[in-house]
Image 1: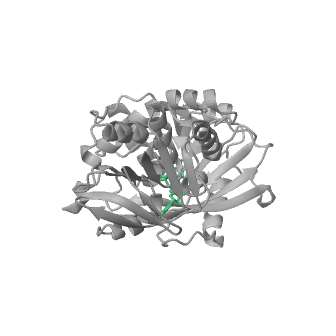
Image 2 (image 1 turned 60 degrees about the horizontal axis):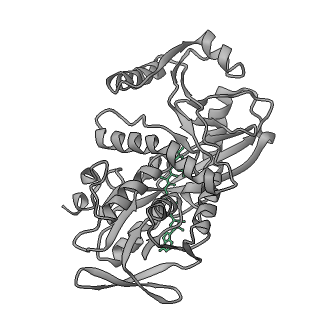
Image 3 (image 1 turned 45 degrees about the vertical axis):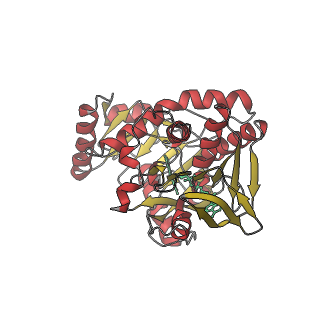
Amino acid sequence: MITIIGGGLIGLSIAEYLTYRNCEVQIFEKNELGQEASWAAAGYLDFNIPWGEEALFSLCKFSYDCFPEFIDRIKQESTVDPEYVRSGSLTLGWTLEDEVQMKVVEDRMQKRQIDFEWFSKKQVQASEPDIASDIARALYLPVTRQVRSPRLLQALTQVLNHRQVLFHTHETIQAFHIHQNRVESIETSQRRIPIDQLVIASGAWTSLLLNQLGMPNWIKPIRGQAILFYSPQIQLKHILFTPTVYVVPRLDGRIFVGSTLEDVGFDKSVTSEGLSKLKNGARKVFPKFQESLIEKTWSGLRPKSVDEYPILGKLSPLENVWMASGHYKHGIVQAPGTARLITQSILNEQPELSLDPFLPQRLAI
Ligand SMILES: Cc1cc2nc3c(=O)[nH]c(=O)nc-3n(C[C@H](O)[C@H](O)[C@H](O)COP(=O)(O)OP(=O)(O)OC[C@H]3O[C@@H](n4cnc5c(N)ncnc54)[C@H](O)[C@@H]3O)c2cc1C
């Protein structure tokens, strides 16, 4: 039996791939499944990682390429459509300063041989007629896709139920019992459970568990606030990136606008300052956006590791503990790839992509 701590997208995706490979799995979740960062996310799938971050780029690209197969498996066993859509994206520019940033993106797309195209103002307006008329031009990336993460989480939960994964919700893991470099059991608020193999996929809360294992705070929460507009009167096909916000159109006419990056601990408040920033950013792109169109606002806690790389792989010297946390801004796109690599590592197979740049040991130095 493989035990996973954390029922976010990372934990659920690992459970999906482990059960696909015929392993028995149980998941411990301190609240309900899939209600934290993974639920809060925009769900755009992108590997536009800064030049120089090649290991992170490779992981995002590998995982992005895993998506079609992952979604096909989920669709076969669930009735919920995760809305996996090939939206394409436009990075919009107004000023010379924006242009400089767009050139940086262009440069790394060229170096990585990723398709892109420059759209003139006229082309932008032809493809997105509701965008502000003072736009200068845009960089079009056909590769950007999206998934609606609350729906993906729901669909995955159905799949895992179907595959008889044991869910223990409202049970917080609080302590570990270690004997000869193995976690022999874990303690929840209610009981003690024997452990065979253990995966820590507890997102922004991971340092609390690492501390129990005598390890430092490798991961901290970074708040992201978001707004959902219900705005069927605005036409939008592409995901938009601007210097202050990103805008993601859903299939049902709703539009996601995100997101702030705030280092405020475990505080999940939605603030007037954060929302103003998002509203102003949205209005700059779409003058038609109005306050009355706001349907919902929320925030989530991204798990940020000290070097902003996810922490993946065996937690040496422990022999039966694997880390899968710290995906920060890219946890949705990195989920199916993480699931495959962690599964392969647990099953003692050579992972399809080297985990070396992501191993926990890098942080122990
Ligand atoms: C506003 C916002 C927008 C984002 N947009 C994108 C995007 O467009 N694309 C992208 O790729 N990424 C995006 N991200 C990042 C992405 O959401 C995260 O990287 C990802 O969801 C992390 O998944 P997770 O499963 O590790 O964490 P979570 O979803 O937070 O799940 C961790 C789970 O572990 C549980 N847990 C913690 N401690 C314990 C314990 N001791 N016992 C039991 N259970 C425990 C928690 O309750 C939680 O359910 C966004 C994030 C935010 C906040």
